[in-house]
Amino acid sequence: MSIAKSLRDNAALVAGILLPVLVVILFLLSSWVPRMLVDPPQYDFLYSEDNSYYGNSSPWRYNISLDAQNHLLVKAFSAKPDVYTPGARLFLFEHADGNVREISLPAPESSEGGEEGIVVEVP
Image 1: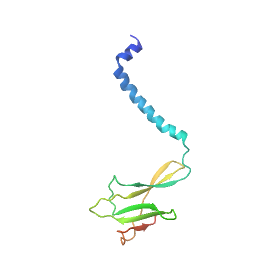
Image 2: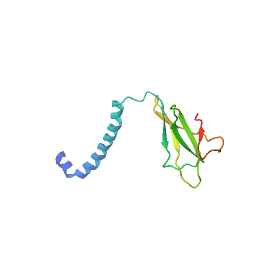
Image 3: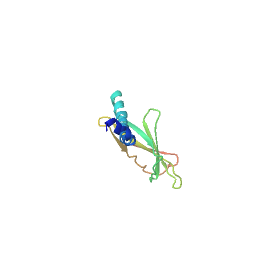
Image 4: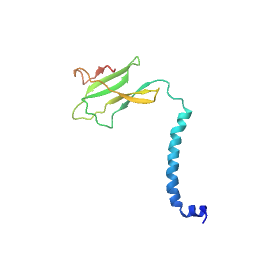
């Protein structure tokens, strides 16, 4: 029996083995090609993520934005215990090694003015 005939007779087996291998190769190429075509970042940068999916047990919710002089502005709002309000998280991408780490946002010293927002100093 020839190899072509045995492959034709076992087409489902060949497809069951070959298709996952092709999918793995496709994913490897799709992650490798952009790295070859685009220069890596030259600077560290901050970015924020809306924490809308995961619950947060903190009594504070944070709003991260830029002020008029393009400086980082973090406001803390007191969270209502019976209402789920998502907060933001802050991350730093370090271009030298490609690591991403979360910057923990400190809680305000006092809760006065927590309804309209308290500006928080980020280390």
